[in-house]
Length: 308
Image (cartoon, rainbow, N blue to C red; front, side, top):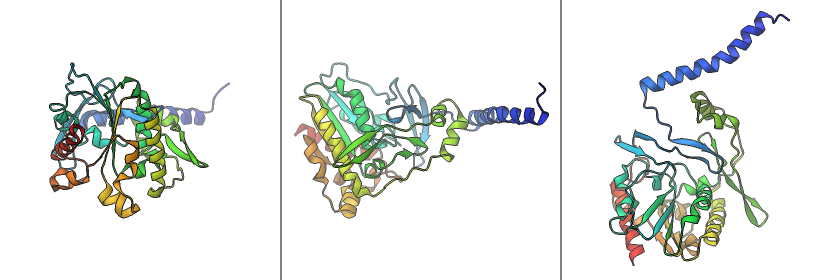
């Protein structure tokens, strides 16, 4: 049977157009920019840090900073092989150290005074709900005398209300009667392809499913309390839970009329970082991330609380 020419032409365009677009994007990236994929699709958390990358970025202050990750997507740091305790860190871009070199990050600064094996799972864009999923993956490494450090900041009050973030699906918490249910990330085929295809990666930013979301930050208090309560229940016996929080003075208090101590009941040690970070304008980059001096201030505050 002879296929009409217009069908042949249509089929050819359908097949060749994405291939040509992919080739053009790869050529552009190779010539005009530094190819570095910072994230990969993750069935449980929505996305995770890409493993084994070496690249540089420019921060909000116009300064270059470098990123090197291991096989787990965690930034490479010099570990103390003889340390008899582990610190597992849950957090977002602040814990990841966005905008600063690894030697300036708060946990690295702490190690000379507080020897430990550090597992810093901080990932840019994460909310407390995703951090709980990560905790369940890593909690088996914790033993008596180890530390679980949860870093909470004002972005978490909105992040836990979202089902998608920057073109990627994420797990989310849904209210069910008097309790809550954790729903898995609804990762579409296009998102899965985005790890291998630049066309798919660009398309996910523009073809983002419209999902109605309640972004009333007051609703996040119950969600975060639920998540922290689950972590408190599941943490291995003898592990110290430390909650370090930022954002009370300019968010939690003025917007919701709440105290920084609202979540302290879920931790053995509760640390307010606001005063330390407010001590100098230089502690924050223009986009609100901690600068090198900000990380030092956080390290000193954490050390004081942990050594008291």
